[in-house]
Length: 235
Image 1 (cartoon, one colour):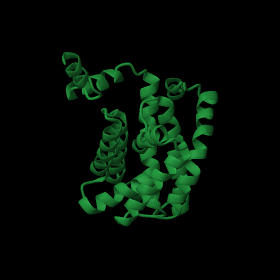
Image 2 (image 1 turned 45 degrees about the vertical axis):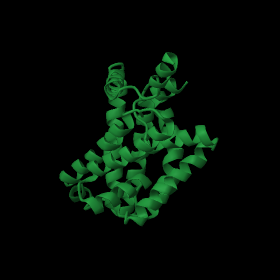
Image 3 (image 1 turned 135 degrees about the vertical axis):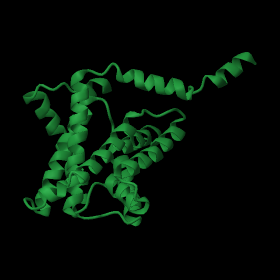
């Protein structure tokens, strides 16, 4: 009986304090170049996402949902990004029966807060007079793709939706592409139905970002001598 009780207590849910302590302690082992790549990546991704929004030609599926929430709640992209992160993290936690990593929450929330910062700094007023909508869209694509390469190489963060995608791959035996498209389409559809923006930029994000990430990682490794910590941790 004692062993059975001990087994029930030894589940996938440690105390919340232990969970947070373990997560925060893990950050102490990050190297300087990992932190730099991560912060630069998040900063560039927020800039690219802001250019997407400013172009009014559509944005990436996750931002379609976040913008839709913000139009309803009117609390800012940062807060709405945190809400979406918590929804996906809760889904992942209940599905996997263990606490999720907190880095996706930090990544998504920080990106949203930086988008709010670009708005406060009146980026649109400085850029719109010099770039047309399609130029902003093209620059946004490049920035988001390069930023994604940096974030992946840092080995620190993963996009919030990709946590659920990886669980689908593991539990349902779907291919990564199948699971990714399922989630992306589901997120976009929900955001669009709630009033989020849709345009050619949304389609281009789905078609262009992914294929550009690997070449950018190769460029970073070969020409800038950046270590791919994400690949090292995965292997």
